[in-house]
Image (cartoon, helix red, strand yellow):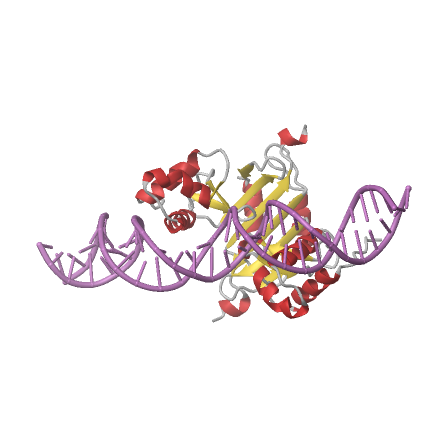
Length: 132
Length: 132
DNA sequence: CTTGTAAATGTTATATTATTACACAGTGTT
DNA sequence: AACACTGTGTAATAATATAACATTTACAAG
């Protein structure tokens, strides 16, 4: 059985917002959106984000400083992530590809070194933007 | 023939600093280091960094907001990058692995979509830190 | 050689992203 | 009750990055 994480009040508010969003959210845009719910300070947001990332409920898109809910039900820990990012409309999708994740998890560098985590971001044009 | 990029004065100062550094440098640490050479403002640093990234002389380590000189002589454009990052000592190395780069350049997602660029960051413990 | 243009520079101010430091509250042990 | 652990609240500040504007340099086309 996977470990159940009972989210705290702030964590739940912030996760729900991110989960409902069709696009990655930035920390201060989250802050703006939850102020009516009593979350007033950046730190409150960052603390919840840190925890949610740690337990794998959300991922950070490093190149965008933005956060997206995990789309991959099997991904309980945020240690092996891959995304596609449209450089025109900024749409971001999580890639769940078994071959890719196996390939990267097993990757060993020249020195035979293996890695416990990775983050991969692909950039290009999404279908919609390509056909414009 | 590869295109020759003649660096401007500021670009050269900043590239030289990054190129000589054994570790990735952050923008404001660069700024601090080049103030004696007449570069006074953040924007001057960021402009040079942007250009250097664009022409592939340096890469940005997104998860660290830091910049490293390209170690891969064949990499003239910053469009396909892979790094290993030690989570203990923060040592960063560029990975030049033909199989890996071919695999990722040819990767197509579920919808058959291919991507023009990618950035991959592996995390783990380097040899030194592992043996501690 | 002068005109046009793209790239680079310099400067000030400001926006955006993230953390430090401190005080306190809730929950579940032992 | 004493303890440890996690979470919360607040203020201040640090660190990262960009906007806006004025000017200068490099260099090719006419």
